[in-house]
Image (tube, rainbow, N blue to C red; front, top):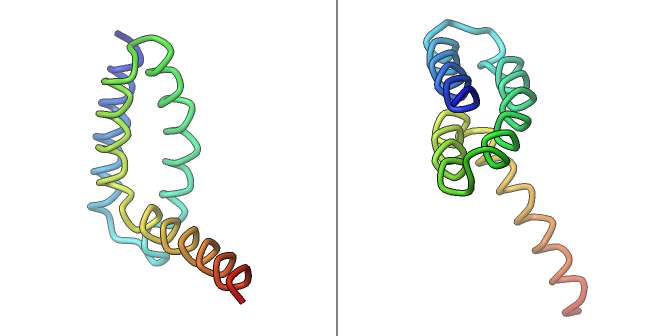
Length: 88
């Protein structure tokens, strides 16, 4: 039960951080949240299984939507470049 409690506290802290003003648009906080969220995600998977892990993952993605969006754009750009090079 401890990992789910810590996940709930992580989500509350992420929401509180999002409400605060920031000069760098919360990027430093996003890096910290990602660095602490990933081990928490693994711990939840080990103790509670895939359903709770996916629940926490999607909740975290909804809070960290810009880093996730930029990661998706970066990955799609890398795949597009590979396919256009191979197709030529």
